[in-house]
Image 1: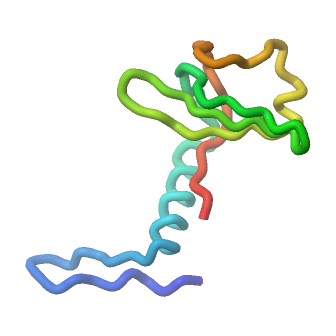
Image 2: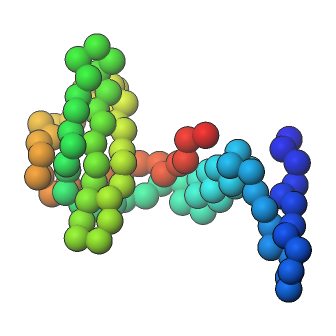
Length: 98
């Protein structure tokens, strides 16, 4: 297990995380709080890799972007062909990769 975050000197104990500690904290908290989600947005930067079969894309709206991956098995089960600019609702798991 990684060491506990250090604290900074000053008015209050502000934790100082390593990059690894912060990634693990974000991953654990996101996966626990939201095991399955639905997100609506527009597909952009779509790439479906011919070798792996995985789809990589960005979901975006007027205020933000979210990088996404769809594994080969899910891509094969789609009942439509994803395209740039398509408005979709995606279901899945949110996570942070270390």
